[in-house]
Each structure stands twice: as structure tokens, then as C-alpha cells.
Image 1 (tube, helix red, strand yellow):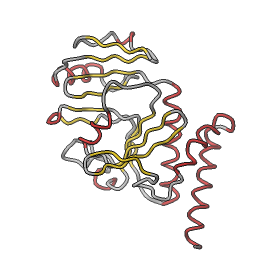
Image 2: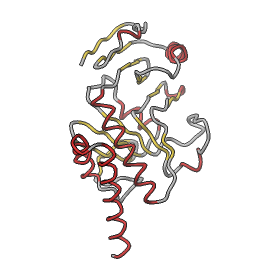
Image 3: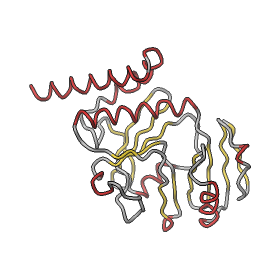
Image 4: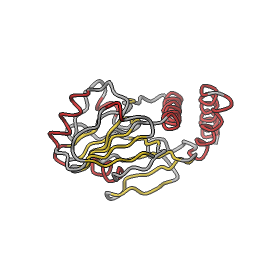
Length: 224
């Protein structure tokens, strides 16, 4: 990873290339907001802001592909359960009162979907996300778990090195769990294998295999 730390002046966007991470120190909230407003939403890089520390990173292909498949798996299980979810991708989550902001690799409203349907999300007026997803292939200089915990996100998934770890927020701290809070029937241990299998059978085939597996689980529960 190409990690650079510098004073509070953003690098030229041409320097933020794949496998790059820039860390800016002593960045005020107003400077952070001005930078994000200046560049707008049409950008490839993502950011984390934690009490004056701003980290910019460019996602890798190895980072984006598993994330996209996990999104497809979540959409598939939602369809099979016939429930609504709201996928918001790399939604900017920010709390000026906490001096913290983050863009997850992807995120969903699930349990609280009806409360935010069609709305522009504004924290803390709206409920926090139900699920945030991080696909990590590089180390971050910022403690993302602390930011998500401060924002009150109840469930966090982290995919790294062919391993999916699921965390639930308990008493202000994340604890690793073997079940999803949003989808208790989800066979979490099978997801990394399906992601790897997609490299040979194709992404859509992997999603169809996952959907078939969910149907088997639901059928077994109904007859059991």
C-alpha cells in the first residue's frame, strides 16, 4: 500500500491512484466539508474523517468485486424473504457534532427501511444504517470501527483475505458473531467460498447458487 501522510492540503486527484492512501492531519470540519463539496459525488476515491484526520483512498478491483457480490447476495436473500431493503452504496455518513464521517464500501437499510424510504439521509435525525460493509485489502490509519460505533450502526461486515467477519454492536463496542442480526438464516460461512467460486463459474452463476441455497434453507425451515 502506498500510504502518505501530509499537512491539511488535499493532493491533486491525479495522485490518488489505485493502491494509494493519503492521510491529511489537522483538517477542520469546515475544510473537510469544503473539499467534499468541491469534488462532488463524481469521484472514485472514498474518505474517512475522524476528529481532524482525513484519509483518502482509491479502491482496488480486488476490493470492489467481492463487495459487489455481497450486495447481490443481500438483494437475493431479501427477494427470497420478500422483504424490502434500501441499498445506498458508499453513502456519506456524517455527524458534525461528533466530528466524524465515513463512506462505507456499501450499506443497507433493512430493519429500518420503511422509516427512510425515499428520504435523503441526515444523521442523527434519521436512524443509523442497519448494515455497513467494508471490503478491506489495505490497512487503514483510521479506526473505522470506532466511527461506525459512534454513529450507532448495529451490524458491520468485513470481507478480507477470503474471510467474512460479522460484527454486532453491543454496549458501544463491536463483537464478532456467527450470525447476522439482519438475516439470522444467512449461511455466513458459505459466502467466501461462493465469492471465490465466482472466479471460475461467473458472478451471476454464483448469485444463482446462493439464491438456490437460501431456498433450500427456507424449505427446510418450513418442513421442519
